[in-house]
Image (cartoon, rainbow, N blue to C red; front, side):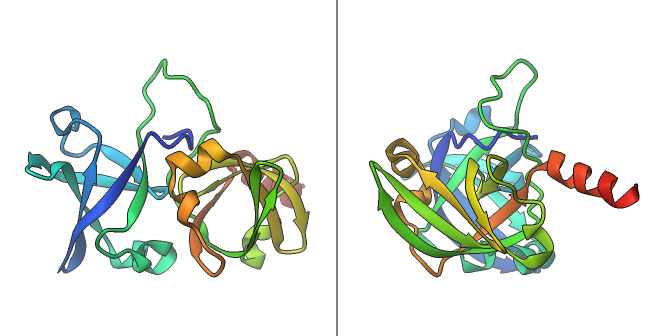
Length: 199
């Protein structure tokens, strides 16, 4: 379980096909404090640490990405040197600064536009029709592992504003129109919609 508050911007250091895709991610996290089997959200996808260590380039951890994950997420666009939003799993007693995020990506959304709005940047996304009904103004979404507040919805399109701090400490500072991003809808919205359908 995660909160959607990115705590490190890692970088893809190596990728190797081994049946599944083995990815090495450089990190600011202390590798000695990462347990094998730990869950780390990588661009919003909950992935399991299968190795970790430290070398001349710094600390790193390895994850295996299945073909299923590659087909359902934006991880198929990863390449060496790409920055990655990282978040360690939530511990009991941690501050819940964002919203409850499972790390189970529902699908991808496409960035349609990025425009200045005050000191912030307004991002407009196109969501898959099957997921768009779960996205509501003032509701929460997780995009590439970042907890964000929706500030407008029109059909399958929705907008969020990224403040300068978010752009500086996450990969949103280098995002561009046409990029596909991992989308996880709010768990509460999913259950509310299901209850409405049932009754």
